[in-house]
Length: 167
Length: 157
Image 1 (spheres, chains in turn yellow, brown):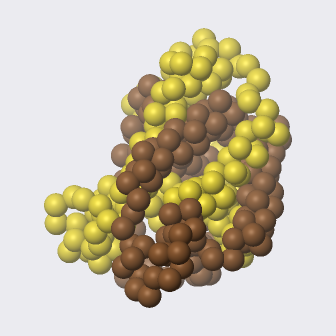
Image 2: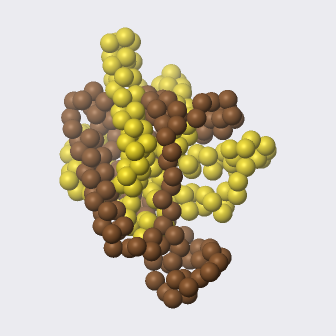
């Protein structure tokens, strides 16, 4: 990402937040599904040849997961639409430190934590925090608190133990 | 809500997915991703400032989304006793039982979220913006999901 991109104000929280929340009733009423993203990682693994030998990946991806694959492809296209059609995000998206080999390795390792963690918790910020809490799931409240605690702890360790590996 | 659906005795009657849902899921994703991007929820700067408690933007976006979701779903549940969508298929409320992974996996994901500055939705949106470094995060996430599936029988749940 071009580090020279200046930081401008985001779409305000009082517009963005309610819009994101309304995807829960909209998707349930129109399509019968709750917004969720992290199961898409499972679908991607489940289509690999031989993956069906593992119980967790032994299901019919096209039957159970096609809707979600379409949803995440849509999310990708949403990023494209904003970037090239609606004036961009208006803020640097990744810092240039990530462009080094070590930075990429860091993103990869962090990605493993994201994939492993969201599958173990059975949901991410969309599945648990937005959809789960909207449907009054207590586990989702606990999961969401853990997301924030984990991220905050990582931030503290990064700053006070490693002296700020990430800017 | 059609009579056919209400009178259906077998679930087979409503098990065929209406064709128009497929483009709709794509469109829903498009809208979701566009809002994530425009609200800068996918930006490393906003995520770092959230976890350092330097600015409230991310917390306010998430909080407003949750409050809106809770209130709107209370209304939906009160007004739509059939618990079906407009095509007559059931609204699928995913069961999320409490288990060890809610805490352990949740904490682990939080750490990953801090270091990558991307939760799963933004990973896809970032790739869509042409931020190619997000492929490294996606590759990691797929490896992580695979490792979880492989180790699942040995993990506490």
